[in-house]
Structures are given as structure tokens and as C-alpha cells.
Length: 390
Image (tube, rainbow, N blue to C red; front, side):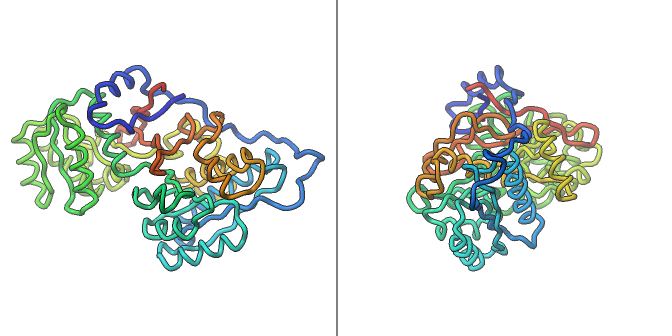
């Protein structure tokens, strides 16, 4: 089974590096395309197993969550449904607001759903996780670790890696790429500064942190960075500003590696960097476009919804599949038991990135889905899948 290594702390980087040297780039089998199997007796049993979607439905990201869930339901029906029953999806709009999320969660509970996927905005997801106590809730998109808690939200889990796991992913790539000296530049916002500090803290002693800059004036920050003589620069912040920083570094003579956070998976980063973008690395969650195993899923998604799937759709698709698997393992719709089964899904259940779906004791995802992208010819391509045999 292919697993991410990001539950290790800084002391585990040497072991992680050795493991990655063996296992990097591995895939694992993806969820198979639905085989057309008729339910017993040629039809479904009476009733339906219903799953809920709670998302900002008027926002494109919320629409992606809904569409991914609906495709999962359709694929499950092709395979005979869940426990022989038809699979339905009902949606509620949380508007990315706390009050609306509470109302939507109550609405879904009243409809008798077997579980819920969604949660694009942290505030709405946090409110929903508490209101849905007792019902399985898989948070597809928001990734703040305090959204879920084994004590306060015992039936809610994160499907996306946390910001800290993003930092771990970056540091594992730095270890694998043999970085020796590291400079970190960030935007001034709290999220970017914390990510930069996490990367610096996890990196020591190798690569050795030599500079930390909060970028206000690009030229000033670039000059200070180059004076520290790093062989690798890490950027956390807005994509356009990251591209500008990279272009300025190259213009000033920097020829080392440049690694950026997930926000740089953006046309704005490529445009800001121009020709300097080639060779830059981006650490980001694996989207359908970056996973060959998701090609069939993406084609069916486009055929059904007339637009391409994003990471939100892929997460919702896997989320509904996971909820369905938990019901199947339980043998009936029973929220408490179904929630317990989420924590011990059968090893045969796999995500598109390969390997199973597991959660840590704090209900965050145990093995996140970050990969390494590289800019090649003005396009982002997969450089390393950050997976090891384990």
C-alpha cells in the first residue's frame, strides 16, 4: 500500500528520506470504473440510502462538492446501490456562513441522511461538525485541524491535509531533494507566516535555515535572501506575489531550487514568474488533472456536468464512497455504528492516490494527499507523488 509519510516529525526525516528513495513516485491502484451489475432480482430494494451535501451551493466550489457527490451516488447505483438500495444525494446551502451551516445541518438531519460530506469554509464546517454530532460528517475541503475533535465532534473527520501537514510535505521534499541551506519568504498574512515558520522549524538541522523574510518590498527581501546564500528558497503566500519573487530572484542571479506552497498551483503564479517559472516546484494536494488514475472519473464527470472536476469534486466523490463503505460494513444505516466503521474502513477501499483512507486519533486525515508539481514549459506536471511503501 502506498502511504504519505507526513505523520512524522522533524526527527523522522532521515527515515522518511530513506523510505521515499525506495517508494517515491508509486501509485497504487485507483477506484475502478463502475462495472454494470444489476441489483439482485433485477431491481433495487424499496427505499434509499441518502447522503447529504452541505456546501455553499451558489459558489463554484460548493457546486463541485455537490457534483462530485452526485457522481459517486450514480456510480454506486451502477454497482447495485448500497445494501441493495438506491443511493440518493440531497443538498443544503451553507453559504460559507455559520448560521446557514447550522440551519443546513439541521435540515439534512431531519431528512434522515446516513452521512454528510462538504464544508468548504472553516467557519461553516466547524459549526456543522458540532450540529451534526452523531451523524458521520466528512469535511471535504476546509482543513483547519480545530474543525474536528475526537471529544467535541466524535463523528466528524477531515478529508484534507492540515496546514501543518502541508509544511511536513514541503520538508520531506526538501529532504529528498538534498537541500542544505533554506531561505523562507512569506506574505504578511497569518496563514502564510505560520506556514513559513512551520517549514523552518521542521527543516532544522538540515536543511539549515539561513533566512526568513516577510515580503513587503520584493527587491529588499530578495537582496536579504541572496545575502544568506541559500541553495533552496521556499515561498508561502499569494501566487502572483510568489511569481514576482521568483522572477526577481532569477534576475538577481539566484540559480537554486524554488519551492512554493499550494496556492502557486495557479495561472497567476506562472504569469507573475514568466520565463523564470520553469523548474520551480509546487507542493499541493493532488487534483484530478494530476492523477492518471482519475482520468476515467474526470471524463465521466465532464460528460455528466459539462465542466471539469476540481479537487473539491474528487474529495466529495471519495467522501460519499467512504460513507457508503461504512454503511456496507455496518450492514445497515445506523449513524453511530457507521461513524465507527469510518475509522476502520476495509483495506480494499482505496482513494485515487492509492492506498486506503485512514484517520488519526484527532480525526484529521492520517495520510494526506500532497504531491510535488514542477513547472515544465509553462505547465505544471507531477514531479513526485511523495508516497512510500508502508
